[in-house]
Length: 288
Image (cartoon, rainbow, N blue to C red; front, top):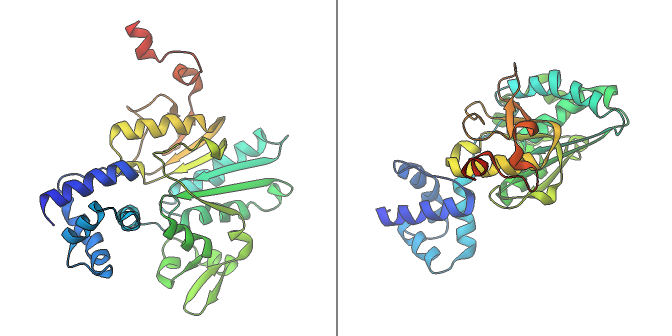
């Protein structure tokens, strides 16, 4: 792969997915795209890039999917799911008692371990959610990983990573050498293809948004844009869960950190006048 090939791929990936590759990430591109190039019958990444430049749209999709498929596992980092059980769900059960409806969005849900972890958390709530309508929307840029998520089939290695044995026994059945999550859990999750760089207002508003371990791949400008649009899709008393290495601090005032729950954020409508239609942002007001 030549430096020009790498620059072409860097630009394409940033435009299509928001992935902002540093100049020293050539090794990552080579490790992920060399197998794809060989599978497609090319001698190397240089030939693959040339084919893309000639208008191979399907190949471009495959390249973006190969570069944006990230590691995931059940109950990753544990703490966000503790927050969901101990703080988020109890607060929303009280706040939504009249309408008895919860909507949760798992952005960049990948192969399904995170949205199904959320579903199991809700299932474990038992009778307190009887009569409630719960929706979990799992989105991802990659159709390939969404298909795996829909199937809910995981290897022994995948179910051993983060999944408590009691939940494996309770919510999975063995299918040959794989494990498949039970139909009632799969039915709790709706899957939709979505690019976070594009408009997602059609999804509606949510009580909880999990947007974890994806913003770390975006540059600052892209992160700010995503946060601004996420705030518009969240109920005023909702919750945003970010990854352990992610934060809103220094990027946006649309959200504020939960006072004692690391990685959990609340909408900051009072401090975000730019979110009110027709009202200028603080910077615009200052310039005026």
